[in-house]
Length: 142
Image (cartoon, rainbow, N blue to C red):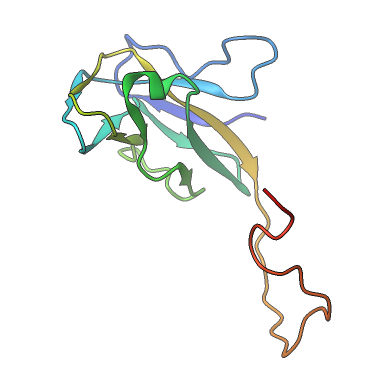
């Protein structure tokens, strides 16, 4: 699959797979930032993406992000197919859950990106679904 990408700072690499078995590409912070304890800061990721038609971009935290006392404020981020303008730079909403400022340096790998196909849903509203109920969220045990 090919996707169009624009870098804002050419001194940083494009998102890349770090191993042959990697499912997602690492994305880089475009600038230095200090994130105060308990705060959320948007970190520019140095790219605008135009995924192929029928695809979306998914951003997830790198598994090591928590070591900096950080997490993605929104858990994961979805980039719609039409979020693809020349100035639509992807950003990571990083939340500092620690009790001290966290530092991000330009070039730090902070999130990972995947591109997936999607299917639009048409609702068929009904008055009743299955007779059998599972018992609610978490009903299959601990």
